[in-house]
Length: 256
Image 1 (tube, rainbow, N blue to C red):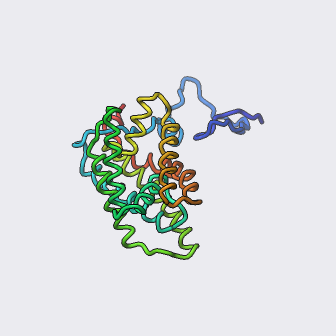
Image 2: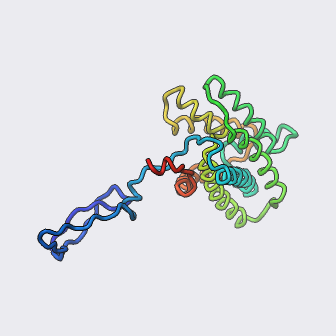
C-alpha cells in the first residue's frame, strides 16, 4: 500500500489518498471510457458568474422580480438592524445621525444621500442605470416600512436575534439585487468609480469610504456598537455564500 498526493476539491491544500493496489485492469486494445466533465470537480473549476450590467430587456420576467425583491429585503434588513439597537452598518450610522438633526425619516434621508452620492459620479464618469434609480427608491420605502411595523425596545435576547437575522437577510438581499445585474446602487458605484480613478483596490477604497461615513455618522449621533463590528466581519462571507446561487447568467455566457 502506498500514499499518493492528490488535490482536494474546493481546497488549495493537497490531501493523502490511499492506493491499495486494486487499480482497475484494462484489457489490451480497449480504452478506458472518457468521463463527462460533470460533478464537483468540474463545477469547482467553472468560471465565476459575472456580475456586470446585463441589457435591460434580457429576461426581464426573471431579473426584475429578483431585483425588486432583493432591494426590498435590503431596505427591510436595515430596519431590522436598527430595531436590534446593537449597532448598524456604516451608511445607516450616517442616516441615523442625520435623522437626529432633521425632521426627515430614515428612508427619506437614505434617498437624499443616494442622490447626493450620484452627483459624485459625474467627475468619476459613472453612468446610472435602471438598478441605480430603483436602489434609491425601493430602499427608502422598504426601510421606512420596516421601521413602522417592527417593535421597539425589545429584550436583549430578541435584539441579538434581530441582529443575527438582519445580517443574514442583508447578505442574502445583496446577492439577490446584485445578481440581477441591473447596475450598481449609488454607494457601490461610488466605490467602483473611485477605484477605477485612483487605481486602488476595491477593498481599500470601500474601507476608506465606510470609515469616513462611519466617523461622520458617529459624530452626528448615529448608533455604533458591537453590531457594527459584527456586520463588517460577517456580511461579506454571507453575501459571498449566496451570490453564486442568484447571479444571473445568460445563455451565451453559459456556452462560453
